[in-house]
Length: 539
Ligand code: NAD
Image (cartoon, rainbow, N blue to C red; front, side, top):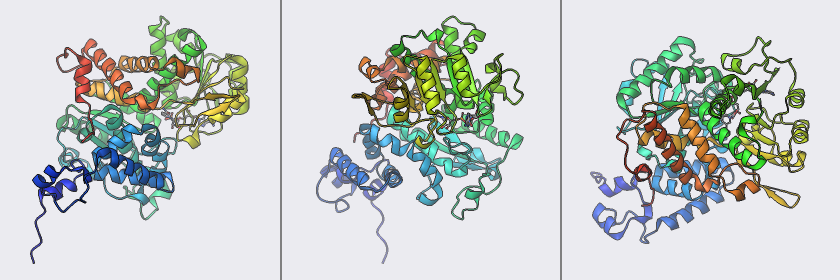
């Protein structure tokens, strides 16, 4: 017996880009050869979403929900994205932080089907050729990681692929970048995490991490291959170890369309929170003293953008930096220390060495920003000291995932007697305090990077400037309503994320035209031009 040839309908049904499941109309079923392949009753996308949500909620835990959503993304892309967009509060924590952290840890064990593009040292000389295996020719958004510093979880090797996949899902959901324009990339240069590499199910290159020149040469081959194959693509560097993150950003930021989200995206979302906090405290932005716990890429990235923002307020670079103080695991960053990295030096002040709490008492910051990956470091004493100094201290516990936050929302409100304006990297539920509902804001980069990407891609920006991040932060800060500020929240609701992204994209593109960094003629109606490009997953 010869097997039947697949009909076009069968192919359409089994292709996640085109599948609509039970929602194909009678006409489509006839035309495409789908009759007999789907159950009788025609479903609407709304009904399908209801079914998806019920099935998702029935799962026993979040990692099962993650696996379920991942499979839906493969099976029916439009249904997946519409479900995400319309239920963003519930689903973002599942497709991104915090669940993605767990998913990365378990990547090799929950693996179902390859997604994205992998590069190893064995591909040297072949990266451009291999990119030709990718099925889509018009790639616009690339997220790449080498898996060495996944969230606050350390070296997860090729398991880190969950991050580019998750970030790109947010690009599509939050900013309407088209799914076929997205390319997740794992720069798999090995892992030094022996627990992983000794796991028989581990999927990555088993060698020790490539470092030094060989590492940067391989990355350069990739970046150049992208310029040849996908000249309009934006490369987002994600979750690299701090020295490499800075080295790559400094090498490429003025040469190709790229940015580092941990440094520049985090900076913009935090600056937005800082600006919004002044709407509650009435402090003048240029008079703020800000203290950081942690002096890694996230923290100094924030400092660098704050410096630029303060300079726009009329301060000199030096004056701006004097407003910013850093404490790391060794104590206050001061000039006499000899253990500092290059990116720390501008913030090492002439001051005597001291520990964290002592430094808070001495410097009296208005705002405390934690980016340590070290949970529990904002102790009761820390929060209490901040509340003694400030009427409304702003506390940013940015470390991800939730388990790594410097303190919990509940503790922060409790210890500050309800005075603190609390923001975290991963979500916390609202807390009742003294009969008042306090809503922790989520200083999530997802407020920033989708809009930056959309704006840059829409106007075909050649590079991304600091001013574009400044604009993004200002736009975001202005979108927080007075009602939300009342509940001590510094960010707009996630439900508004597509509006946020569009507003940011317009601001970013405006800036690109202003700075001569856009590669298209300026459209008459920039907002409509960008809005028209946004992917809409309704069937
Ligand atoms: P990093 O490793 O480069 O820096 C960590 C810094 O924290 C170092 O300066 C280290 O000395 C300091 N540190 C560690 N433990 C400490 C302790 N107990 N006391 C004082 N200082 C301590 O890492 P990074 O890339 O800067 O990221 C740090 C954290 O920020 C991560 O947990 C990450 O999840 C988080 N992050 C959050 C966001 C966000 O929410 N928007 C974005 C990026 C990074």
